[in-house]
Length: 459
Ligand code: ARG
Image (tube, rainbow, N blue to C red; front, side, top):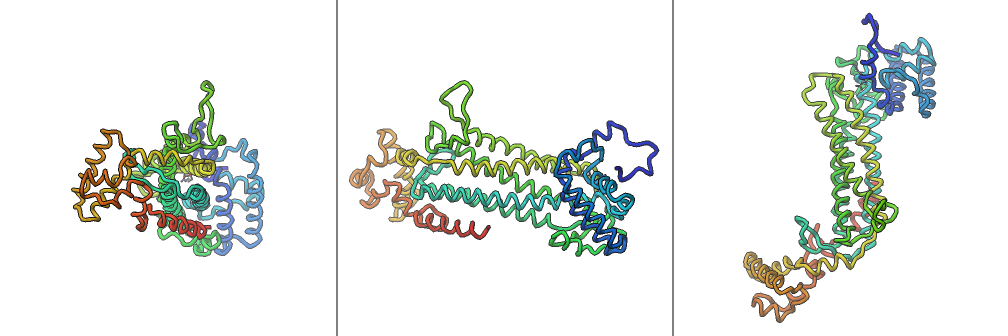
């Protein structure tokens, strides 16, 4: 079934057909295409183009097409140019000449926009749900070790002690923003393009608001040329997916490190790790490495469509057919990675003593000491210098914070008061950080509860 041809003396060459046909990938849009076409048939009926019985026949035939499309064999041997032509061809097999009316005044340019929007709307919802589940897994993992302490890092050097839940809540925030981004992408996707024609607006009196209501769209698009030219909604989705993958990739990198022999903080479940074909002792974090690796594919998909769109003249150009594969690729990868990350999070066991030892053997309390001096009146730069010298002296003599006490500190510098020695214990320093967003134990406990409430409101 070809939707054009009258103007040509010969058909397209075999090489061009093979080169340009998109059915093998855009068949993924078949449900959206059928739903959109059913709504279009109803609109044509309101516009007086189809009779009510004709519309009923077409809508029923579309329904049977959708049922048959559940079996992959349905597409076997199909030579249609794209999913839109394929569906109309199937309609013709079922309703005969009546099928010739379904495309009245409709262009595939608006149809492909509609189909992609319908499909993408669901994909945004799916990503938001998978993110919600992953956020729940992060909170569960935080709740398992509410008092565990780890060194927070900058430059991958031990920086300051933080609570394990505080660390996980940082990812919770990233994923919460990702959910918002998918929500924004959904909002911009959720505009109904039909009635735009090829680019100039339909020549038939469609009630566009009625089509929008029929298909659950919140608004109708405002400019027919924009409809044919626009793929911003696809870029929005790909951007949301890319940032999500960056977050997942960073989490993966953290946990690859933290589960290594060098760190030894966390144990990943057997179910999410693999062995080596040669080295019997290996337990490799392949699930996390694949998340990190697949992030490259999603970022690639975003770049692919950005480059495709750059510099295209108004309005539709066939280049835009190249939007589908990156979109499908990105959604496959981001959905799979969100599920995989959740399974990994559920499997993680924290060996609390390892990160606690890392906190204690390093001078992660140095900032706490400097701030205590400053609170007591020593100008901060001086305080910084005093503690810097204390650390240097300790590194030289191999002393940890626990190797000092009130007397030896006062001997080292008279600015140290006896209570400041308490801060040699990293848990004491954290108590000075009861500030909104900080790692103070009470603040973190409240943040965990607040996060649970936020999560419950997302359901
Ligand atoms: N398969 C096409 C796409 O995905 C549908 C639109 C074709 N329009 C056209 N004028 N050739 O972009």
